[in-house]
Amino acid sequence: MSQLGQEHFPEDEQQTIKKLVEIFEFLMRDYQFSPSPRTQHPKSHGYVQGEFIIEENMSDQFKVGIFAEPKTYPIWVRFSNGSGASDKNGNFQPDTLGDIRGVSIKLLGVKGCKAFEDSVPNEQDFIAVNTPIFFLRDAKAYLDFFPIVNGIRDGKISMNADGSPKHIPDELKASYEAIAYSLPLLNQVRSQVMTSPLEANYWSATPYKFRDTAMKYAVFPHLEGKKFNIETAKDKTNYLREAMTKHLAKKDAYFDFCIQLQTNAEKMPIEDPTVLWDEKESPFIKVATMRIFQQEFNNQERIEMDERQSFSPWNCLQEYRPLGGVNRARKIYGDMADFRNKINNA
Image (cartoon, rainbow, N blue to C red):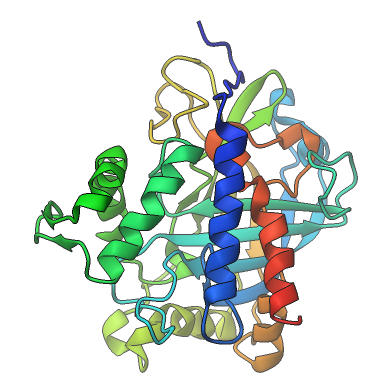
């Protein structure tokens, strides 16, 4: 029987992760345009400054790590699209098409022991996407997922309007069958219409250590006034950046940062992030406010800063060590960022 916060390690997981490193390095080395983009969430909508304000009055059970006492941390925040190049010319797909959207939050001036020896000192990263569940179950699923995504992009795999496969070449059938469960999950996320990155909910989707159990976290916006009207955008291909630019030219943006604790090891598993943790079983509790300052960020200097910056779920305090196979696979993010900067001569 599983216990709260307990991980289970497949015997072949390290070999799987080694293969993932080889795939990511090949993709970046083989990229025909410069600079080589991130392998995860390469298209940015904005890289912005703000502050992370810890709640003054919260239950003692949440006072762990940075949440132990009221404090305000400076932050950098990056909003993004998950898809890579949508064609052989290196162009990103337009924002009008469905996608997984993400937010990466970097706290500065954070004291404490890190979960990973290669982490950057005095930083804490939080990574979240616009879905409460992840679309892959484990590290091995990545090895089957990438050939299918590339096959669809390159026209080797054709799909019906309802998302079912129309044609799959024989050499890709085994990979497709292995991750077929993930495609409806992806389609569900991609069917969402996002008006602005500052008007969306984001979830960690994967679990993290928290005392003797685990947590997931989420970021929920303060919605005030009318939402951004996509039809009024001057550049619909990049309307999410335009929406952010217009909002932050006039005022700050605010989000609630919330934590959900694992209270049932069977119903809220560590090793399968495709399973939704029921909020009736354990609700999200606010522990901080994220404030993004009014600012001008849509300039070349900030874009170059964005390109040089990296985020990783493993760039964190040991109190929030990433849990589960998907997160263990994501430990390579730091190495991938270093490799990308090297080939880009950053």
